[in-house]
Structures are given as C-alpha cells and as structure tokens.
Image 1: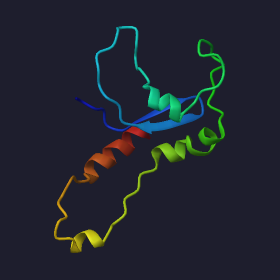
Image 2 (image 1 turned 180 degrees about the vertical axis):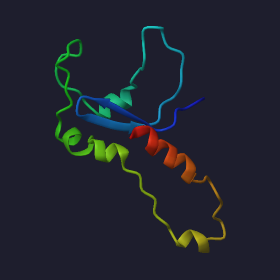
Image 3 (image 1 turned 120 degrees about the horizontal axis):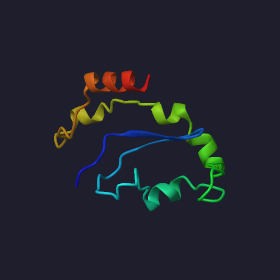
Image 4 (image 1 turned 60 degrees about the vertical axis):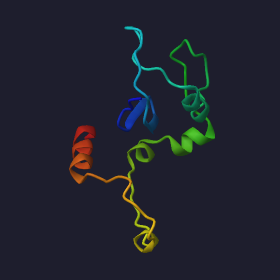
Length: 104
C-alpha cells in the first residue's frame, strides 16, 4: 500500500492533519474520506449542501489551524538505556522546513 505524507485538510474553519491511503478514484472524485475520518470528525447539516459544518464540541476544540499545523517531538531518555531499542525511523529537518515553507 502507498500512503500520503501528512496532509492538512481544511473545510471553512475546520482543519485536520491526517495520512491517507493512496488509491485510484473516479475522475470526478478528488478525495474519498474513510469512515474512520467521518467518525472522528462528524459533520452536521445536509451532506449535499453548502450548509455542511463541523460544529461538534470535539471539532471546535481540536480541529483548529493551530492543532493541525502543530508538530512536536519529545525525547524519551529511557530509550538510550534500553538494550532492545532499535532505530525505527528518523526526522528530516530539511523536510520539515520544506513543509513549513509550502504552508506559508
């Protein structure tokens, strides 16, 4: 399977940062939101109108531009002392800087 890099989705004042599976779609379809995304971000209002809104308490608190763009790392010093610890990935500062310039 192939996945996107983290994407910031915006609909009006609702923001979400997610990774999605890449799949072929019909030519008239730009994105297919999976059920887990809809369950996490339940929309209110008629789905076939411009009145669709994300006004649940959870969305109002957590689906902001700040929350979607926030990126944090923390160091767990106990990992350095764990003989079973292995490298599972890395963070590319160059890549993060490129992402921030694209969003600006």
